Image 1 (spheres, rainbow, N blue to C red):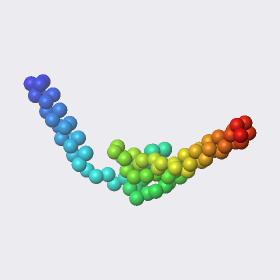
Image 2: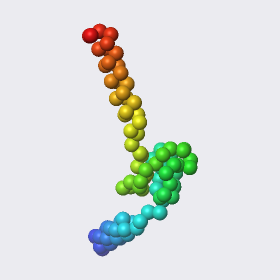
Image 3: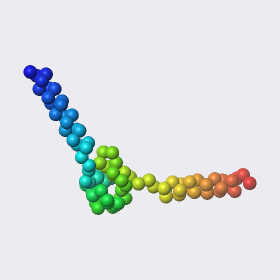
Image 4: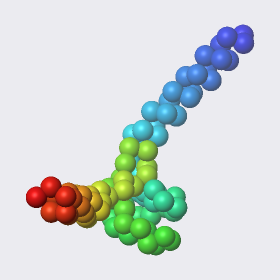
Length: 89
């Protein structure tokens, strides 16, 4: 009898998971403060962070910060040019 109850509980758990994966989400969560936001929101109301599209687990994706990478590369390039100008030429 216990085995039948365990199997029924397992079957019920599977059916609940199937239903939840089929349902579409109406909201997404901010990756910084976990506030519930509408799907079309670009900036979080609570923490004012930019947010991207809906991720796999309901969290919004963080947008990629291209500006910081460009500044870093330009800074290294300037540093290397300075080293060349000051010590090598």
